[in-house]
Length: 162
Image 1 (cartoon, one colour):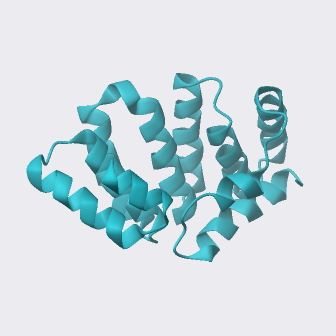
Image 2 (image 1 turned 90 degrees about the vertical axis):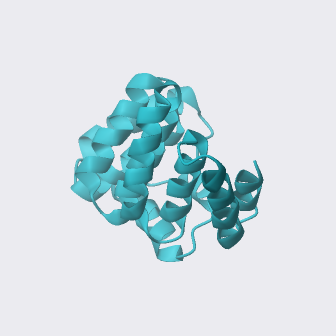
């Protein structure tokens, strides 16, 4: 819990410290593994997040829908857009009413030049959440490097002007 609080306070160093304390007590604590992965995503090391996220997915598949969101986010920020698309689609399959994953899916599709598909997803998203704004979504996240957040905004704008 302390790691989650530090994350939303945008204290990524404190977040990492709290995660490591939890993992020292239980190296198979799925939430702590997931949170270490999430910290790596927003701290500029998205591909380093993947092993922890995949491990957490194996340990705790009941929250796999959330873990797929993070896997997709890692690939999106790393510029591996096709892998991001696959992960976000899996999240949507597991959690059909998610607006979060649809927003990031649109960004990945925009980077891939799949504008028609992105606009189809945009229509779905607007039915789920008519007030959705990518700028608000990305603005809440604790990116260490603003260029990572900008990559998401740019991909989104390539497909759907906000």
